[in-house]
Length: 156
Image 1 (cartoon, rainbow, N blue to C red):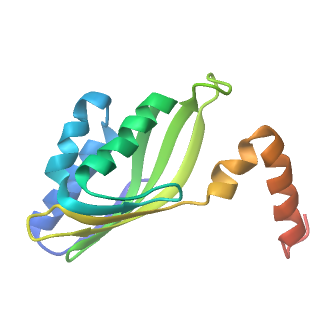
Image 2 (cartoon, helix red, strand yellow):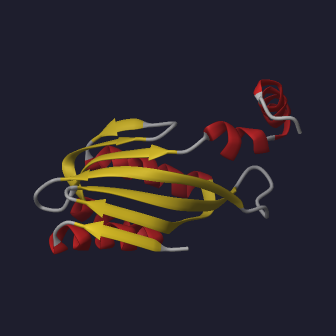
């Protein structure tokens, strides 16, 4: 599914398309394009990182390419309204040091704010680290799945 709901200016829609194109084709060689899509003092936050500035944001993605095999983003939905956008995505990757043949998929979403030049000023990723990552790890996964069953109100 790739739904697109856009209300706002054509410039804003173009800025979001540029960002989506970057993320869906992101490679180490294209990391310099972050400077086109992000304001110099942009704020980025996800479950593991919180940084300010394009250089720090680039560092997160440099680390991603160092630690993971074949990381890629698939944008499944996008909503654009005024100077804000919301993207739903799948992040697919393999872990170099643990079952490198097994592809993992994290489903999440990004809330984005843009400046007048169509550059991202705030980027906040939302995804459930427990469900999407921790439960899939050998020992920690046992504990996380037990906690989920214990805390759930539904019978399984």
